[in-house]
Length: 424
Ligand code: SF4
Image (cartoon, rainbow, N blue to C red; front, side):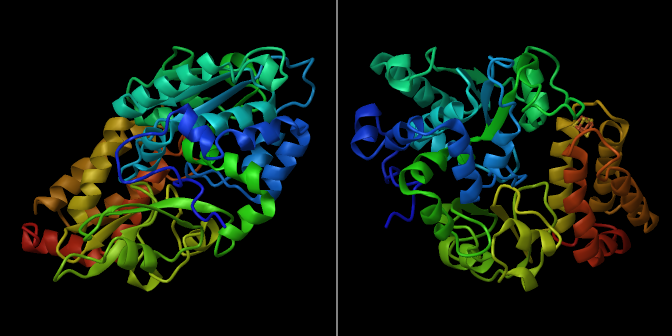
């Protein structure tokens, strides 16, 4: 039984299968099956399979599609947008999928477009992803030349057009409504919700925004069915996922593993454990905007709810390991500098708060901090919490700081009392 649907075409060589090779290995069969299904049945199948969005939020994909208005006459124009603006610190999973199996993504997009009735689809790709862009351009041209997206194949009134749009380079474009603004040529700031994009998205039309990895799950889900897909997971969540590990581990990288694989298995078995002489102090489970967890959480399954109950988020599923020889204050400062630079500037707690937090962290890290700075940090980051800002960037930026203040408070105090960084 197939257990690695996302990476089955990815070999040791840095190459991507062309259309012929992809089709010779079951490629586009899932899509052809989807075309025989009424869209409502397709949406129902994906919902029942339990595919949750792999961009970080973990929302049920079929449920998300179901919010698109059913009345196609009243809403004849709909859009599908693939969010390929992967910029979360420590995350590089979508890049692998796009560089090494671009047709898998295009097939997933064709399936999603059929489900929601879209005849135009956009891939909004991170500007620095040059190789992925090049390989996707080649794959789209192959598809068009072969006429696979034409009405004769799809049964739709119009050819499905897939366009590639390169981001001009802001982290905020990963937020789906800021992405839609950027795609429309406007300033990339998040929109007020409701209305949600499924009802009023790109140019005011019903729009679904799905992450690269989410879409790549669809071809094999269609080919092998919802039961098969659910059983791929080890725990509560269905399917497989690209999990990753970075930091001072022996073998940093990405691996396709069942949902529910434990943190310990990812770090010790797949990443080869920490480098000689180092021990683990904590980890960010799903990118730079998640809360630190400690060694007592190593046996947690990497599932959305299990990680959530432990006080963090599964996020992108790419783990950043913190070892005993690395300064947690410096690590948090580095992350916060990134988020402060990437703020879109729309709301005050983020635009002004994050630079203040950077200044306080810099002061502490350099040994010039005061003990009152810890309370100041807590106050500033609580003002960035959910409900106080227009989007999730600032609350996400606050998470590693707040959790570091809980788990590694003594390190902050040692910097202040010692007048320098004890790790230098
Ligand atoms: S939280 Fe930050 S990124 Fe989000 S809207 Fe406000 S200023 Fe922009």
